[in-house]
Length: 253
Length: 316
Image (cartoon, rainbow over all chains, first blue to last red):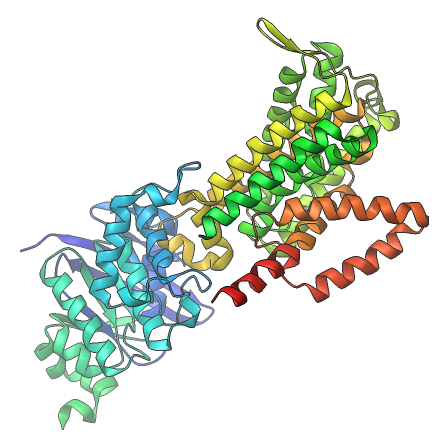
């Protein structure tokens, strides 16, 4: 069995009276494509925000690769290999598509402290960026200013920016929202291939059940900040508690 | 093609400045010296303002740190101008590191107000520490001693000779800032301006890079201050006043915040325009304000920004 890449111990977070995470204990195995689902307000976003470092938990611990990262700032976690993408487009709008990818690719290699070196001399990183652009299908748009891309392409770029940081573990927050079917297939194939090559462990937050059940090896169901279901797609589909609170008729039918 | 055009313009500008240095009258040389010093101030400032998107109202403090650093060193330790400039620049660098450390934790209006507060503190220190800084008189009698480098010794006592020292340091500044803009570091600064929420998720420490930009701009402000003190042969406490911090902002806006050459063009326009208006009226601020209004409202993107967008329209 593969090692746990991320471990969460007794995580709690509340906003006023709303319990967004209550005693969450989870472990994510390396290479297992996992989806987190749950109705609106189940605490999915809060969980991702805590794990990626945007929100401090009230109590509990987060261990990444065996190191306690509970109190590390975002950029340190990214350097260690824990990254995320966003549900809303969150790119560098006035930069070219190429530079959007180049920035994290340079940062992750600790090249951004180079003050007087011309950026055009970072040849190896440039080749890397070209490869990534080809993989996500944006190589034709490399020189385009990011904000003038179509919405779907901006979503693709959003995932690309996250991938450029070469994460070991990547949270994708509704990665295919707003994409057309072609883009969706391309991104999902990318996720699948990267996951199978064991370079990156993916954790998806998704609303689209087709995607969740076709892609995931493991599904975690959240409800009111609690884990109410955890297992293979079959197990979760057959879990009575899950059917009751969330999936309801859709799966029963 | 673009690159050759820029290089061509740079060579032309350098040639013009050299010709001014050789053939210009005393007055023209003095004015051009001031333009170049303001250019250094504004070029450095624009790394923070135009590139990183942070508006500071406290950079006069670093200008003054350069001026007083040089002045004190030259009056009390040694009058060697290069050593004085290095001391002045080091003072500004250190001061901007300290002040920046506190300021970069905040953004937007909070950042701007903090820089203003620190700037005012520095001004009142300079104003009140009469024994050290000379208070409202400033430091007077700073010598422009010969620039001795081992066996060669170059006199800079004549404004014309000193002009060429400023010109060489301006050239160094332009080169360094150009390199910084086109380095991986410069890309991160642009990323901070574009989307500071995302930049951390690219694996970049927002605070450290903001501080880096702050110190770079403060250091060049110090260089400008040291050169200014040598030009006037005294220091002026009002060079630390917050109103002086507005100069690089105005200059960048006139020339074009988003452009590299904007601060250079803006400095020339600012100083020449001010000089012309002052000849006609004492109310130079009123007229200057009106002209600024026109430039900022009519030429969004500044003079250089407008020119390059015209060229792009023609070209493609």
